[in-house]
Every structure is written in structure tokens, then in C-alpha cells.
Amino acid sequence: MSQVQPGDAPEVLDLIGIGFGPSNVAMALAVSEHNAGAREPVTAHFFEQQPRFGWHRGMLIDDATMQVSFLKDLVTLRNPASEYSFLCYLKSRGRLVDFYLKSRGRLVDFINHKNLFPLRVEFHDYFEWAAAKVAGMASYAHEVVGVTPVECDGVVEYLDVTVRSEEGLVAHRARNVVIGTGLRPLVPEGVERGDRVWHNSELLARVDALEGTSPSRFVVVGAGQSAAENVAYLHRRFPGAEVCAVFSRYGYSPADDSSFANRIFDPGAVDEYFAAPGSVKRKLMDYHGNTNYSVVDIDLIDDLYRQTYREKVLGTERLRFLNVSRLAAVEETPDSVRATVKSLVTGEETVLDADVVVFATGYSPVDPLGLLGEAADRCLRDEDGRVRVERDYRIATDPGLDCGIYLQGGTEHTHGITSALLSNTAIRVGEILDSLLDRGVKAASDEARLVAEGTGGTAG
Ligand code: FDA
Image (cartoon, rainbow, N blue to C red; front, side, top):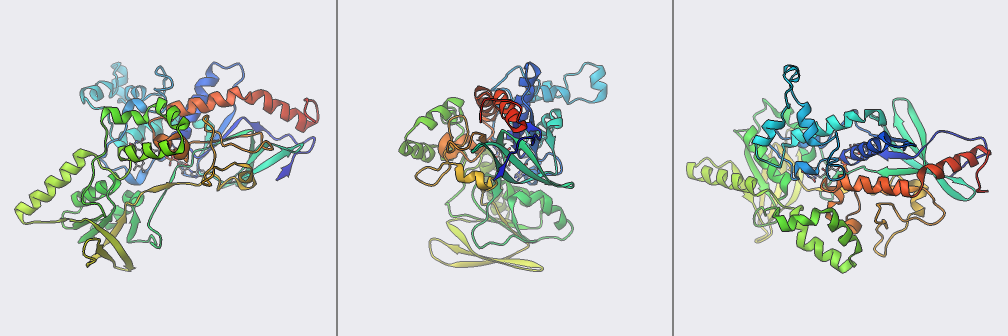
């Protein structure tokens, strides 16, 4: 804990964002739109550890599509007239010659394509375009390594965010932080990732190295969307290789994207989920987990089934499904990897010597308190030990901490299934900004600054 002395007056930002993925890019866009018409702009800066903007680059498979409508972009649900929408992005995407011809870029082509779900690579390009619009608010290749509470008269008024970059370690002071650090790849306990043992998030970064090596077998563990995409991709890319899918289900289950079920992603559903008792929250997740978790787009399931049937007919089977099974062991050697697959029905073990084992075994939210250091001790937890979060995404803290610590992600237990998804991002950042403004972020920080300078204010 550091103490502010009279005369200490480093610049105090209203908001520091940790991470600059889609959630915090949306936050920066909301701040930028607010500032355009504000008498007193909100001062904000975002730190991102990657050297440039990147959204799940390892999974930008060329034919993969979004699982969310383009209308749930970074701004539209909050401000349908925003200049940062996916539609504005499409309009901007033309060749120079189109510009002189007053072209609409790709807008008309996208409409004719009659599909709400853009390619994943296309949405990545949209995110990158949007991030560039607010590049002045972001520093890339800057990893946040810690947060230190700063006390004024016994109350934590500021947070010092320590950032590691080429320049070394530098602390930046803010009255509020918004943590948008996303998800971490998850592999089963005991599994060591290596040259031949990958998580699916590494797929595209690693797969090129196999070109020209004639791989003969891949094993893909998991039954969700990423697993099915990996199976289809490796099968298509390496026509000489067998691809073995290993999962404990009987078969891939389709994602429920029907209209009524889809309402679980609505902004209103967040209100209801937040207000619901714990038992109802659990029920809602049980009923509607299959809109997102361990499920696959029905078109991809159909494609994979058609492919395996075709191979059966032709006697050229390269797709194998080891269902109701689990990976019992994986052992990497310099030039191969041995996977032992155990049937959950018979207990029988099948040994597969492969070039690569890919774990498509999901992601877990990063513990939001991990970075907060001593400030974490002031964050309140519920009876199950989970962090308590208010409706405005602010962590509930003891009265000795007067700063706002907001979460984008890691709030599934309080705000529901959209916590780690894009569906509600535009609305969520608007709610966080409103919360900052309602709490009088400007007035409070100015007052605190005056106190720190020993030149005025009412406190102390
Ligand atoms: P995200 O993980 O994208 O970004 C977090 C950022 O914080 C990263 O750039 C990271 O480098 C940075 N960071 C972390 N720690 C840091 C630190 N200490 N200092 C500085 N920077 C730090 N959802 C959906 O609704 N529809 C969809 O179609 C998809 N599709 C999809 C595909 C794939 C392959 C995956 C893995 C996930 C999805 N998702 C999704 C869900 C996904 O969580 C969501 O799309 C966004 O990535 C959430 O954005 P965030 O900015 O919250 O996290």
C-alpha cells in the first residue's frame, strides 16, 4: 500500500483499462463517443500485452464464422447511429478506385450474402479497424503486472497500475480500472503443452511448421465448436493424414441458436439473471448452457457426418470418432506423440501414435483478483468464495476502498452467460461508463487531486 503525501500529484486518469480485446476496445469507443460531446472528457488509457491488436488469432480459420449476429458488434446495441459499427466498417472497406466511384465498399455485397454471421477473419478485421480508431487511448506491448492501492487519509482513493514494457516498469494512477483480460486456454490437469501437444488456441500459429512433413495422424480432444473446427480444418489441410476425434459424449451436440433460447443473451436477460436467486441462476445455466458450451454449429456437424459417411462408402476412412472415451495418457517424444484413449464403456485402451495432439478443452476466465494485489483483500466475496459484483459490473469492496474496479468478463455467476461473450458488450460498456459518470468520477478525482496537492478540498 502506498501513501499519498502532500505535493505528490502524478497525473490521475479517470479510467485505466487492463487488456485491449473487444471488451475494452468497446469501452474505449464508448468513452470516445461520450467525450465528443462532453464538457469534461473522461480521461482513459488501455494497456494491452500483445504487440498489436489480436483476437484469437490462432483460431482465425478461413471458413469459420461468428456465432453472433453482426448487429451485436462493439457499438450498435448501445448506439445504433455510431460511426464505429460493423456496417460503417463494411462501407469503409473498398479499393481506392471505389472511393472515387463513391462506392459502398463491401456493404452491398454483404447484404446480398443474406447472412447475419460474418466470417471470423472479417470480424477480426472489423475489431482491428475499430481499435485503430481509438489507438491514441491504447498502448500495445504493455503488460499489466500489478495494481497497488494508494491511500489518502485512510481511504484508498487511487489505484497505481504497474505496466511492463520496453521502457521497464512504470506505474500509472487512476481512480477506476476496468479489467478485460479475457480467457485463458485450459488443458486437463497434468497435461504439459509442447511442440506436439497443443491447445487449439495455438492452431494457426503452429500448423504451418508441419507443411511439407507429411503428418500421418492428428488426435483432437474435445466435443465443442473449437474441437469440431480443428477436426475439419486438419482433415482438409492434410489430405494424407488421419484425424481422430476423442470425446466423452456419444456425438457432437448442436448449439441451440433458436430464437426463444437466444433471448438468454439479451440485455434484459442480464437484469433478470442478476436479480434471480442462486437456485434459479443455476437452473438457467443448466437449461441454456447448450447455447454456448460444448456444442457445435449444426452445419459443421452435418458437414463432418457427410464427410465420414462418404469416406466409409469409398473405403478411404480418414476421420475417426472415438466417442464415449477419454484421453488417459499423452506422452511426447521428439518425433511423435503417443495418446492412450480409454473407452468409458469397456475400459479398453487404444494407443494412437500421432504427429500432434490438440486439446480443444476450453478456456477459463482469468481470476480478476490475481492482478489486484493488496486491493484484492478489500474485494468482497460471496458464500461460495466468488467475487461479489454489483449490477454495474463494479466489484463490491469494503468502505475503505473508494475506487471503482469494474469487470468485463468473470461475471458469469452474477450476470449470466454473456459474461465472456460479445452479445452484450456494447450495452455493458455503456452501463460501466454510466456508472463512472453517476459516481461523479470527475468531481471526485479532482477533489482527491487537490487533497494530494495539499491545496484544497474538503476531505481531511
Ligand atoms: P479477449 O480475451 O478477447 O481479450 C483480452 C485481452 O487482454 C487480450 O488481448 C490479452 O492479450 C489482454 N491481456 C490479458 N492479460 C493482460 C495483462 N495482464 N496486461 C495487458 N493485457 C492483457 N463470443 C461471441 O459472442 N461470439 C463469437 O462468435 C465468439 N467466437 C469465439 C471464437 C473463439 C475461437 C474463441 C476462443 C472465443 C470466441 N468468443 C465468441 C468468446 C470470446 O471470449 C469473446 O469473443 C471475446 O474474446 C471477449 O473479449 P475480451 O476483450 O473480454 O477478451
